[in-house]
Image 1 (cartoon, helix red, strand yellow):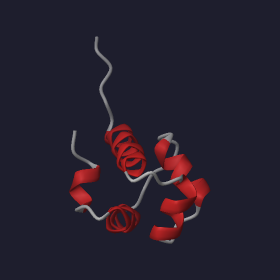
Image 2: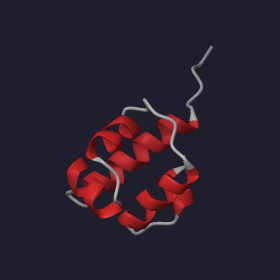
Image 3: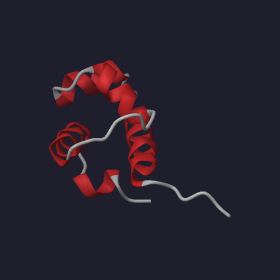
Amino acid sequence: PARKTTLRTILAQNLRRLRAERGWSQEDLGAESGLHRTFIGAVERSETNVSVDNIERLAAALGVEGWTLLKR
Protein backbone atom coordinates (compact mmCIF):
# COMPACT_ATOMS: atom_id res chain seq x y z
CA PRO A 1 0.00 0.00 0.00
CA ALA A 2 1.05 3.56 -0.69
CA ARG A 3 2.44 5.47 2.25
CA LYS A 4 0.20 8.30 3.40
CA THR A 5 1.73 11.76 3.45
CA THR A 6 1.21 13.31 6.86
CA LEU A 7 0.26 16.91 7.49
CA ARG A 8 3.57 17.26 9.33
CA THR A 9 5.43 16.23 6.15
CA ILE A 10 3.40 18.63 4.00
CA LEU A 11 4.21 21.46 6.43
CA ALA A 12 7.90 20.57 6.30
CA GLN A 13 7.99 20.53 2.49
CA ASN A 14 6.11 23.82 2.15
CA LEU A 15 8.21 25.55 4.79
CA ARG A 16 11.46 24.42 3.17
CA ARG A 17 10.26 25.47 -0.31
CA LEU A 18 9.01 28.91 0.74
CA ARG A 19 12.15 29.60 2.75
CA ALA A 20 14.36 28.59 -0.18
CA GLU A 21 12.35 30.74 -2.60
CA ARG A 22 13.25 33.74 -0.46
CA GLY A 23 16.90 32.73 -0.28
CA TRP A 24 16.68 32.54 3.51
CA SER A 25 18.63 30.28 5.81
CA GLN A 26 16.92 28.59 8.74
CA GLU A 27 18.56 31.24 10.89
CA ASP A 28 17.02 34.01 8.73
CA LEU A 29 13.56 32.49 9.09
CA GLY A 30 14.12 32.09 12.81
CA ALA A 31 15.01 35.75 13.14
CA GLU A 32 11.95 36.83 11.13
CA SER A 33 9.56 34.57 13.03
CA GLY A 34 11.04 34.86 16.51
CA LEU A 35 11.65 31.10 16.61
CA HIS A 36 15.00 29.37 17.13
CA ARG A 37 16.83 28.05 14.06
CA THR A 38 17.04 24.56 15.60
CA PHE A 39 13.25 24.54 15.89
CA ILE A 40 12.96 25.56 12.23
CA GLY A 41 15.26 22.66 11.31
CA ALA A 42 13.24 20.19 13.38
CA VAL A 43 10.03 21.34 11.66
CA GLU A 44 11.63 20.99 8.22
CA ARG A 45 12.71 17.43 9.11
CA SER A 46 9.20 16.59 10.40
CA GLU A 47 10.67 15.85 13.82
CA THR A 48 8.42 18.01 15.95
CA ASN A 49 4.77 18.72 16.47
CA VAL A 50 4.07 22.38 15.64
CA SER A 51 1.45 24.45 17.42
CA VAL A 52 -1.06 26.52 15.50
CA ASP A 53 0.52 29.63 17.06
CA ASN A 54 3.92 28.72 15.62
CA ILE A 55 2.44 27.92 12.21
CA GLU A 56 0.94 31.40 12.32
CA ARG A 57 4.32 32.94 13.24
CA LEU A 58 6.10 31.08 10.43
CA ALA A 59 3.44 32.06 7.90
CA ALA A 60 3.56 35.72 8.93
CA ALA A 61 7.36 35.75 8.62
CA LEU A 62 7.07 34.27 5.12
CA GLY A 63 4.27 36.65 4.14
CA VAL A 64 1.70 33.94 3.46
CA GLU A 65 -1.59 32.78 4.99
CA GLY A 66 -1.18 30.04 7.57
CA TRP A 67 -3.24 27.54 5.60
CA THR A 68 -0.79 27.69 2.71
CA LEU A 69 1.80 25.94 4.87
CA LEU A 70 -0.59 23.00 5.24
CA LYS A 71 -1.82 22.77 1.64
CA ARG A 72 -0.70 19.91 -0.59
